[in-house]
Amino acid sequence: MPWGLLKYGLASKYPARRDIPGPRELKKSYEIVIIGAGGHGLSTAYHLARYHGITDVAVLDKGYVGGGNTARNTAVIRSNYISPEAIEFYKASVEMFENLSNELGYNQMYSQRGQLTLAHSDASVRAFRLRAEINKHLGVRSEMVDRKQIREIVPCLNMDKKMRFPIQAGLWHRDGGTARHDAAAWGYAMRAAQMGVEIHQRTEVTGIHVDKGKVVAVQTARGTVRCNHAVQAVAGMSSEVARMAGIRLPIRSYPLQAMVTQPVKPFLDPLVSSAELHAYVSQTARGEVVIGGGSDPYELYSTRSTLDLKENLIAHVLEMFPFMGELKLLRQWAGITDMTPDYSPILGTSPVKNYWLDAGWGTWGFKATPISGKCMAESLANEKTARLIQPFGLERFRRFKLFNEAGATAASH
Amino acid sequence: MKIMNCPLNGPRNISEFICFGEVSIMPCPQDSSDDEWADFIWLSNNTAGVVREWWCHAATSYWFIAERNTVTDEILATYPASDVFTDRVEFKHKNNL
Image (cartoon, each protein chain N blue to C red):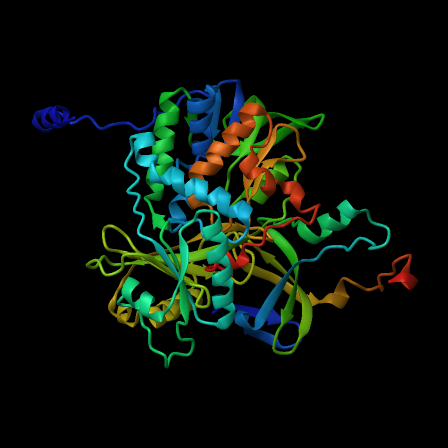
């Protein structure tokens, strides 16, 4: 590698590295068609090719690789949930992130710097205690911390007791971290493409053909492709794409607004979020402060930002870090979050045979990119839902067996 | 600020209103199967486009129906529920309810 770098440096031409091959013709038929070339879809494709030897796969996207919610999320990776099923699932994902740069040969800029969630009420303190105990029992590093410990973890936090809602305690999650979300999508895309998976960008799916209760073809703006299996991984459009296959989902879509400030010197190491203030803050490797957490109050598919929500969010962040009032905002945006009633995803089979769902990712999808791809690939290859995602099937709603993660999701509603 | 036209109170700031989701027909609680009932409780059309929803003006507890476009975030019409629901909904087993 050092010689390669030296040769590159001394060369007269610098050929750009292409991560994935350029556009090409769609084939008439594929074994598996994945709708959505975001992190989840590409992770599924990668795991199919790498671990199950299935490369007759097409990943279709109406836009470009990682251009949807993969690019819009705020890249929080953690596993401090409350139900054992969810903890086991997200813990497996955190463990995959820890080795993802090596696995893909693509720098994920994964940084496991811990996540601190703040409680400003007795109710939150009680919920945190429960989460900490369940987490510890399942091998996740979570512990309750008092005000003194919080001051040690984040010295610049406003610990004033005269605030309207003073900080009472915290849930300190050492396994929490962040990564570069684009790198996850591009890393999976590059390696999947190298193994023969076809990635078709700007190929919008316009219909799904179902014959005798089984998916047979996917209609796109570039022609119809037959398939044996189809997977939808289209966060932000799950209900609309599922409707093409005649499936109704328990999803309601809301925009979640976020923003980043201008870059400043490092002052914030862990990720900090607050259950009461509905806000979360982290500082990126290049110094920008990422702020997220404002969900719009009514269902919407528009990614416009609104001043009142941004003002609210900023007011809450300034309660935690008053000195951030000096910072200028650099960018602001919104992403459409597919909220489920229990704040858990919908994974696995659907009422249509061989049509698989990777949906309902609300505000918690990025952290599950590796594990959901792995589980979906395993399910497709064996035609049987993988053990880790069995609890999260669509049928759980008819059985009233929900996994309420509303509290552990903290930041949105 | 976004303005919503309340059929009772006129144009008001949208932060005074609460959205209660799409207008749907409740299946008869006595006659429907468990699956039908679960679907009614959990599933949502979640349409990208024009929807018809229940809204409430929180300050006056006034319930009404609004039509809006969920892609463009435009409110197209608001009207009292009595414009749509002219008859009382009767279930067969009303004595058991």
